[in-house]
Length: 163
Image (tube, rainbow, N blue to C red; front, side, top):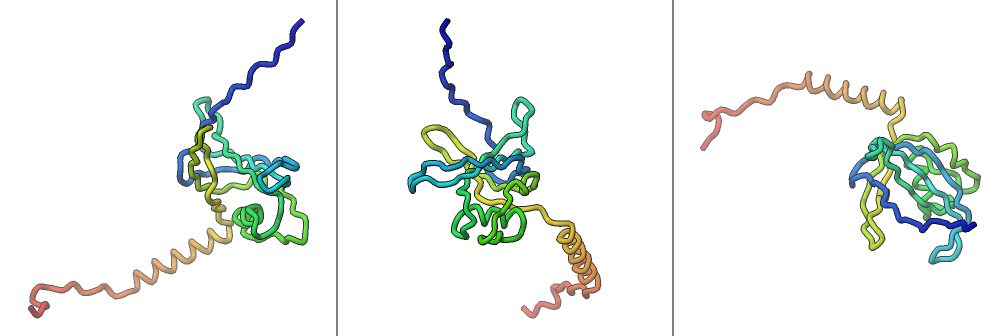
């Protein structure tokens, strides 16, 4: 009996629109050594679930492939900083799986190629911590109080204008 493997069908995934999109980092995958234009590099894949839904009611996913190095000139270390607020120590191992569950706002840009349109992450903006939210509320309250205490600016009347 013949066993036939079906032909590979290229699926165009639904992608989020360009601009800010709230998302959760749901998975970090170790992709091992991947051949690149600069030789084989260790890669990791971040899988993000956005708050936007597909036609089937599933979260729209965004994928981000990064070189698995904490070198400051790489993209992984700045990405960790944008998620946690701290630069990881390049002299120590970092548990990337600890980032899973992190919520952030992704800034999406589209990359149009012959193969299709891809959603790339231009920036990641982490959520404020409870302490940062409390500080923001304190500052807003102080600014409001100062504005209420300030003397109103006098309105100029026509007779006040010398010309």
